[in-house]
Image (tube, rainbow, N blue to C red; front, side, top):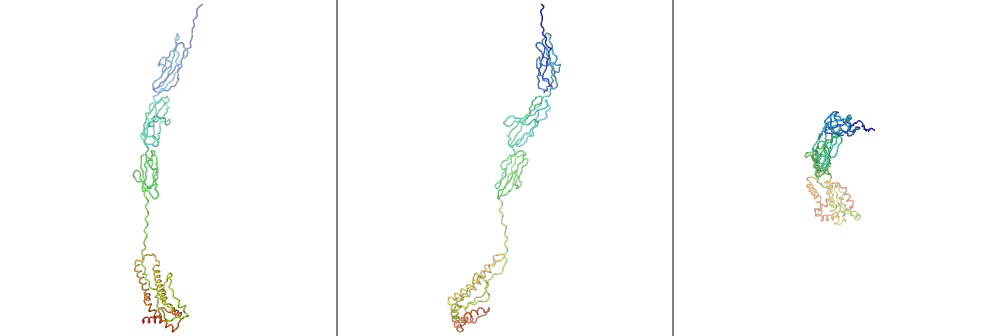
Length: 458
């Protein structure tokens, strides 16, 4: 029986390449492609081609693509190990786009030295390399710290500092990622943050300034100070950096960018001086010479002696004028008629009392004239002379009293003669007094003349 032989027939080999693409790369980037064969017999051999004709790579199921800028496609063929080897047709073409490498951006800042409160703007140069679109990420490094992500997906970043921002050196980096996955970092930009500008505010005694002390101000901001004087004080002056701005009660610093000083000075309010009072010029007035208003006749009237029936009338003694109601003495002379029945001592006392009363009335009248109010009341320059004149007049008025004392004894004798004359005529004492009251001014009594003749005789 004839022998038989077995034959194994395999399917025609084929291959598939992935990724299919298009794959976008930047120069310097690589892409690995993988071939997946099917069919064929035995071991499979691989051949990679660039743009369909240029063999590349090795006999491997994978290929690492790394080319310059351009557009490419990648294919692969496989060959089996059959007795009569079979090579597959070319695989599918994988597309590759290679762009320029992503360049490092240049970041600039508006300031590299700032004060607390200032704002720094960081900006990247335009990105034209690599594969767009791009993603931006800012990194911030604080003094004695580490980098931390800040900002947003933007080509610029604003660093806003404040009075609480740590002073010292800060660093900023911009990281860019393109669509091909390339990542680059910018050069670090350093910024030094100094303490915020300060305004030193002070005030002297007698007032206050608010706020006071060393005040930190955000760079470019404003600050208002209020100046207040204590009770009894006033603002003398306000100095800003040594220059006077006047006696103001408030002052505002705008757009502060440097350090300043402000000081306020106070002083006690001056005590108002009394206004001088005009002194009235004294007006000369007529001399106030006091003249006696009346003559007091103290010579007894011996015209008649009173009878026993008129004893009660003869005992009546004229009362001196009340000094409290001092009025000018009438010009008409008053004759005092002592009665026969009065004792010598009583009559003498009566005469003395009447004379004293007359003197008091004269003095009161003088005081009334002197103290009469004048407008304006000014002390007379010749007050001493007037007082001496008044004393002289008063002494003249009191002269009869002195004479009465000397002639007391003579008067007693004269009364005896009056008694004799009166007993012969028996004229009542009341009539004598009545007649004396109606006697005309300047008229002289015959009896009085007789008494005077008797006194001269004595």
